[in-house]
Length: 58
Figure (cartoon, rainbow, N blue to C red):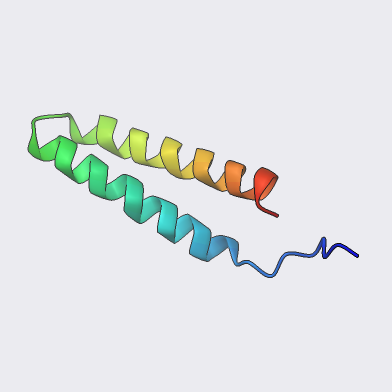
């Protein structure tokens, strides 16, 4: 009855999440934030987005 096998590509989800978080980080760097903090925030946001996608949307 339920299709438990997902056909979503995790690479597409990672790229989408990374682009969204990267856009915000780019703006933050333009306002004076440290580049390494921005990279860390982008990596963390991407990881959380992938975990949420995997747990709640599969």
